[in-house]
Amino acid sequence: MLQTRIIQVAQELGIKNLHSHLRKKGLSRFHATEISQGRLQKFDLPLLYKLCQAFKCTLNDLIQYVPANEEELEQQSFLQPMVIEHAPIDVSRKLENLDNDKRKLLLEFLDRL
Image (tube, rainbow, N blue to C red; front, top):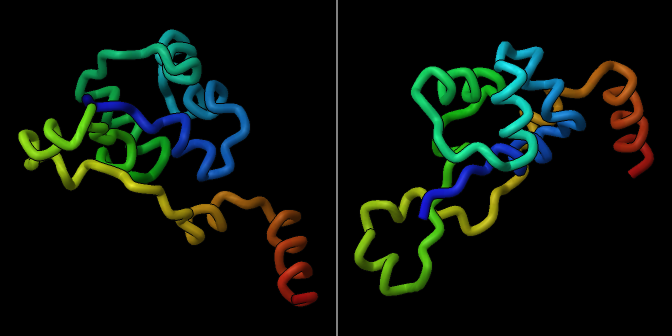
C-alpha cells in the first residue's frame, strides 16, 4: 500500500502549523485542511507538484510503500525503493527553516558543547 508522509515531512522540517504553511504555499483551503488532517486520499499531478514545492522535496519524500507482509514485498519488489525504514533528519533543510533568533540560540548551544 502507498501512504503519504506529508505530516511526517512537515514535522521533520519543524513546520508547526501545516494548514497555514500549505495555504501560504498556494494550496486551496480544502486541500490544506484535508492534508493537514490526514484525510486526502486522491492526489492529482498539479497538487503533487505544489506539495513538492511547498516542502522543497521529491515525491519519494512524500510517498512511501508499506508492504502488508514480506510476501507482498517480494511480489512488489519494484516498489522496494519506496520503503522507508526510518527517515533520517535532513539537518541542512531544518537549518534553512530556522529564523535568525533560533539560529543564534543553536550556535550558543553548540558553543557550550
